[in-house]
Image 1 (tube, rainbow, N blue to C red):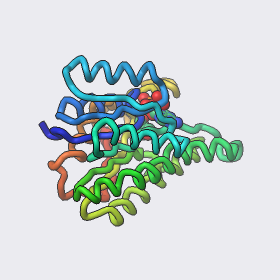
Image 2: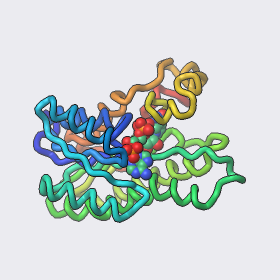
Image 3: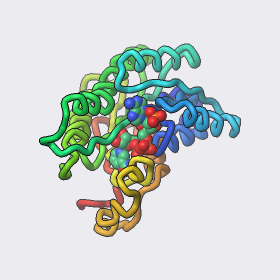
Image 4: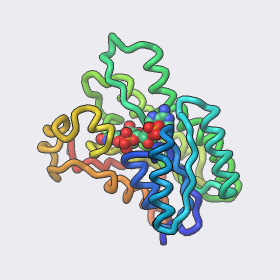
Length: 246
Ligand SMILES: NC(=O)c1ccc[n+]([C@@H]2O[C@H](COP(=O)([O-])OP(=O)(O)OC[C@H]3O[C@@H](n4cnc5c(N)ncnc54)[C@H](OP(=O)(O)O)[C@@H]3O)[C@@H](O)[C@H]2O)c1
């Protein structure tokens, strides 16, 4: 088991790639803190993990609210006493054209996708530094490298996470390794919300692997980055996208 007795917080784990990662981390021996806003789905994930005889709790937290990030870390510490792995995976889309983008929407997307990552890191890094070891993984996107028409706020947040990941790696080493995953099209509720596989058909057909990614494709990479198999990797943004844009 690659994460035996590690404590992992996975934000955005009530669905999609976060959920797949929470389950995989638990199967690899981690005690998992599932986080999101939807209690029904949070409970489902914890039940799935517990039904396999593994360990997890859920904490309801809205990543647009700093006070919820604090509650998330406090409850993780209350339940398991420490935090070894933080997967900053929660994220939301924004699909307003630039000229129509309202400041409220801009602030919300920045808060959920970027500011919460900084704040959770500020809460968790001292714990990891003190124990001399820790891993943080952020979820950027292929939208962290290139812009797409009509996604200005989302694209900005995912570019910001590239810079934040590298800054975190510099400032939190040598004890803490920090990397990001940049998923391409992955079949989750987020892709379904914009029209499903059909909406990303051109992207898939234009890629060498010619298929949409599955949440498990991201979970296995998150596991690699979370465990000692990647012990000499930090500050990297790893594209997991079936080879689009090569
Ligand atoms: N799917 C793709 O093709 C793709 C590609 C590149 C990057 N990404 C990124 O991958 C990450 C995971 O997305 P996904 O594709 O797995 O989508 P998903 O299935 O829709 O999952 C999104 C997760 O984020 C959580 N979330 C959203 N807003 C939140 C908020 N305000 N507070 C707390 N949690 C919040 C949701 O939980 P609740 O609803 O319970 O709050 C859910 O667990 C995101 O950062 C996304 O930007 C996705």
